[in-house]
Amino acid sequence: MPQKQAPSPARTRKNKKPTGGARAAARLGAVQALYQLEQNSDADPRHVVTEFRAFRLGREIEGDQYAPADQDLFADIVLGTIERVHEIDEKLKQVLAANWPLDRLESVLRAILRAASYELMARPDVPTAVVINEYMDVAHAFFDGAEPAFANGVIDRLAREIRTS
Image 1 (tube, rainbow, N blue to C red):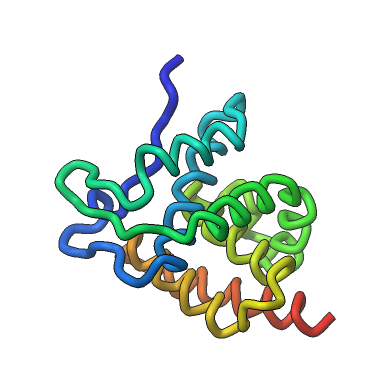
Image 2 (cartoon, rainbow, N blue to C red):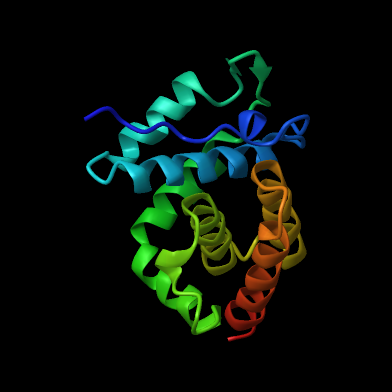
């Protein structure tokens, strides 16, 4: 069975290329890698990180040039999220409305929320506002509809839950 590749924000949203520095590029790449890992459950997370470093981050893909990424942050978000996914999912279930189970969310949106959750839980060096703003930018790179506002609300509730407990 062929591996499903990570979505490209440049292809997903017309006229909207990802912007920002190396840390923003790391977060965008981490969401793409998490999506790919969810779609290919047999994939080794370390192999996916290596693949992204070699062939995606900072590269030209389908005519779009991607910004160089903070390699350490990228790997930390991907591997840390995978390592703590059950704990992260429990936190997400606590803040999602009862009629919005986690598995009902679109895969890219779930990857965004998981990555943001990981940063809020494991990266106290990153200010809460930065986490919220960066993942809002990532959501806008993939979605034109209500998803970015939905993500903002969930991440904001997560931040209040995680950073104050």
